[in-house]
Length: 386
Image (cartoon, rainbow, N blue to C red):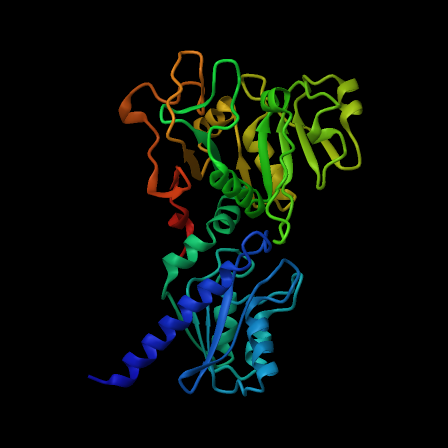
């Protein structure tokens, strides 16, 4: 057995695992771009590494090459291990393929090709035509899972949608009278704010706004940098009051109030402000905002992911229309009971058990005294070349 190829394969595997960890540092900051990490190897050791830190900043490949320069390393003949196909077009930054070729990189190992039509295969062809050896495939599933939001955004032409709720063991989010504070404990609530940071938008229905008057902001500890998602309110007839937190103009970030033609013109004028957008969308058969139209609008404004925080009718609408990709449920060790208690899914989804929606890749972990249950409603990898 030739030990050299085996040793090289293990070194590349270690580098790819490191690149995936580096890529994850960009979570919440790179959208609508993917998270990407890169590690450069030469003579059996790491000579540079980098990741895409924020949209508009250098991509992982150029960050890794710059790290080599700072370290005083010669990149000629080196191997670059990267979690996603390098781009070959001018966007917010110049093509990464040009930087790789100019640096004399001899070999590039890619976890998976970019599904973006502007990139897909073009980066590989550019490198190959320049004499760079290219390999694809190692850790492809892991790389796809890392960029599940980006992949859905590109492949489906709409934002990735996560349904989030804090529920009791009997599936309730509030008592019959509306009391919901608090279903889950502090660790689960902190995780909810992390989810807000990692999504581009946070969506609720008007009933939640009127009942709870939420701020829908990300409030992580002040020693951590975080960003504010776009607040999205589904309000087909514009019942949102101008005094409500989400439209009062006192909060950081922006709010989109999505209504239909049934909204009074006076209400549109009353709510609109510099940081509050009121947009009219087509109505569905129930007179509610048509979700596909809303998601297309969000996609057109580079909103790559949204966190849906309910209530029950909104969750049911996304499930019924098959526009939900992932669940994040904080399951509290409580039983509320009562026919009038509010469920996290309101409305019928299936008439028989065989028609029930299935959740894949289910995971569970402790968050303080609660259980965080997560799972996928669709296969993110189905549209990718892995």
